Amino acid sequence: MIDRRQTLAALGSVMAAAAAGSARAQQPTPPARGTSPDPTEILELWPNGAPGAPATLPVERIEERSKDPALSDRAVTGTHRPRLVVFRPRKPNGSALMVAPGGGYVRVVLDKEGFEIGRWLAERGWTVFVLFYRLPGDGWAAGPDTPLQDSQRAMRLIRARAQSYGIRPDRVAAMGFSAGGHVCGDLATRYDARVYAPVDAADRLSARPDIAAPIYPVQSMRLPVAHGGSRTQLLGANPTPALEAAHSPENNVRATTPPCFLVHAEDDATVPVENSLALRAALKRAGVPVETHLFTEGGHGFGIRGAAGKPAAIWPELFARWARTHGFG
Image 1 (cartoon, rainbow, N blue to C red):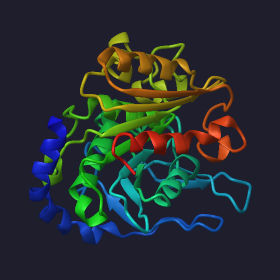
Image 2 (image 1 turned 120 degrees about the vertical axis):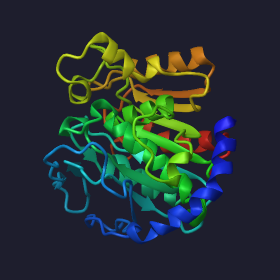
Image 3 (image 1 turned 180 degrees about the vertical axis):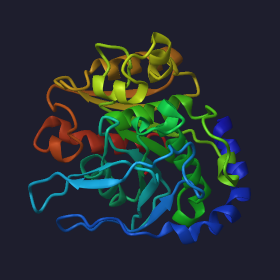
Image 4 (image 1 turned 90 degrees about the vertical axis):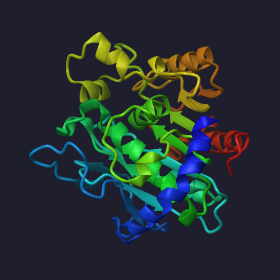
């Protein structure tokens, strides 16, 4: 595909610039509960600070919500230093995943929709990058395009540093959960939208995921299908129909949208399953390969831990098997 050829051709010119930033890639993250430590490697997205900062930066806080001393359930609010936390496998298989956790565009839920899938796939050879993205309601100048700025920049940085991670720049996937599913869907359909000024050589690379997996995604911005809280945080209290349409990924699907993997529970009372069904229909109309798994029960936000003991627990393995059919893993 054109994007793949462009990615490979541009990669060489980026390596030197990427190496210059490697000293900034090591910072600690808060320790997790239980027996699995957090990774300590972090990639800062914006060397000179994120674009369009408000006059007063939001204050970042990490809240531990779990009452189980052996199980972490952290949520981040006020992200002003968008970054990637890196899960390196012992033996890289050449595949990479950028994952955007959910949180209703009010927070970023780290553990159950980020670090857990990071560990699971890293054990299987994937290099996983969990995205701490900025929230559109925190006053950033780009408004509803703020998370897209971060996801595009993240994809380009991953490709820029592919050699150092033992990954292939044409095997970079994106995944997102709930509102993070909107981040993923927006990236998959608007990967080449010009939403920020180029920063360095990495921005010559493609931000297009090679495959994408919006998991129980916030997708439509039209009520009553839209998740009301995410819609308000992204677009404001009274968005116009044109604004709703512009930020509903189903309206931006085209033939170059990457193959997609969709998962949803039909009893999801928070983000209706119609979000995935509408996205699937748009992908089918555009001729984009899509695999869809609907489960009778699971509710919302099940990630890995919430699906335990239910049929939906198989979804990570289904994703890994599907990804292999596209050359991953």
